[in-house]
Image (cartoon, rainbow over all chains, first blue to last red; front, side, top):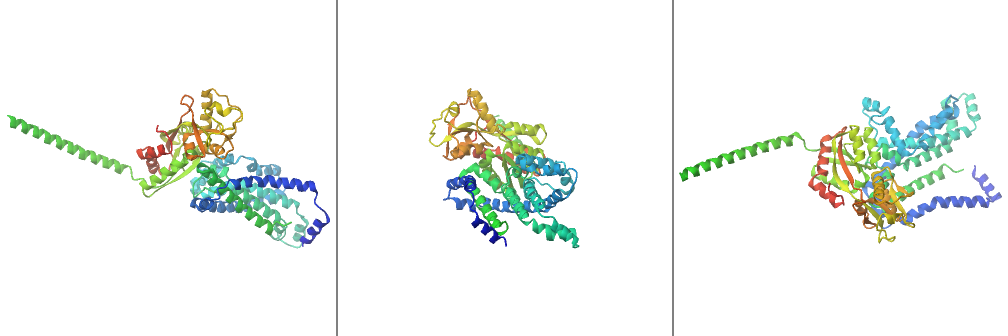
Length: 269
Length: 265
């Protein structure tokens, strides 16, 4: 439906040269470091590094935890975005600013903050520990929590933007036709904000996948339990920086492949 | 008379032997009891260790697990200044091995470890340079010459603190120097060609396997790092944690540490 329109527009007007040049510079700026990495990668031994059981464990943990963090971000972040966009309550601006805190906080400090909040001696954590015997640090669940902490703001901001930009008259129309709030949200709001929902989910997933500081501080660096790819890469630097480069490239290739596939499927504009 | 004397000597010898044998038996008995009092190490432990110990502790952990079947050691490697607050905040750690005494002393002062930490190894500082030493670096003073890119560990981690002390001892003024977040990160900048010189530990240069070579720093300017190990008070498996500490400080443990370039304390 959208395709022919955009194609016609492309034929009608040539893109401005200045914009293209700047865009090319931006792409080069983002891609050149990757080429640098690729050029340094130990291609002769890369297969051995990749099939190493520690690497396989780290890659598996990375995917499980980043998907878990994305799921948690969706479950809690979408309602938060909706409240921020639609409910006028005192302190809304402050709340919105607080949501951004994990984005500006150095991740290692974020990890310490998580300890102080939900660690076994933390404000809330001591009760989790006493009442439910739940200890989050140094567990896989702890990795998911740390990743959610840094990744959820990306989802909240993107989805809130989508909710504010959408035409609310569709919701009003559905309500006048007798739809319940939940039905309106499910059948009208969600489909309308689908692009920002998918973009927000992808952003939070990518942020969680690359997370290092909060994870190593809060969840530790335990092989097979909390050692995700970025942590394995950090440790690989101990023995062999080239292996670290190989592992980084794997992480980059896999995440670019996933994001590109998502873009083709969902984010065509 | 002679035979009587011989007889007396024989009696004395027999009594002495009997007493000796009995005391040996009693001794063995108490030794056996002592062995029974400390049960055989079993189960899993988590050991937080400074990242400069990664290679040698991976080896020590495997050797320990082989010696005591049924144990498993999981390591949590990181910068000492990250590992320390983790323990303070109740992370499930059984033993802690730091790269300097101050982080361990902090935990002692706060009552988070049992007894006093044991220093199990020492490490000297060295100047790491690229293979062949293309910039002809011989002394600390050479590393701050124009055209030489020096990199140090961040001042917050032990290797950064010690390196700055070494420069002060050598009377060399440091200007703004780029830093790595820990010793391995700092050394990797020399290994990857991003810097010409780094001040790191002898063991790190050794682990670079020829990608970087060491230039010795004279003892008068050198700062010797001490590696203490201690049992964490809230350890869930104190017995195995203690056994691991004993193993690290044992003869075979020392030999492994020496093989990785650590100096015996």
